[in-house]
Length: 66
Image (cartoon, rainbow, N blue to C red):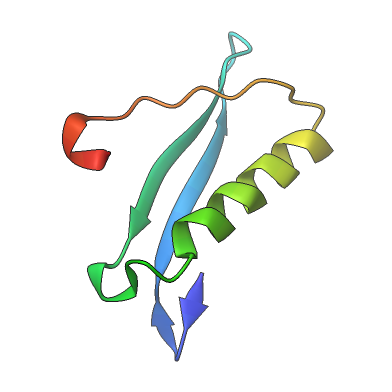
């Protein structure tokens, strides 16, 4: 996701061979914190997962990520 010609954040959808799909690599530039970037990216990942017929997503997160 870009804003003002700057990358505000990114996320990745991984469909693993064993059938487990993951929201991976969610990152938001601290300059864009609190502006809905993460919410927008998560919704986009959910929409893409649904379009691919994926009903469940996994997320591995660390304590600093919360």
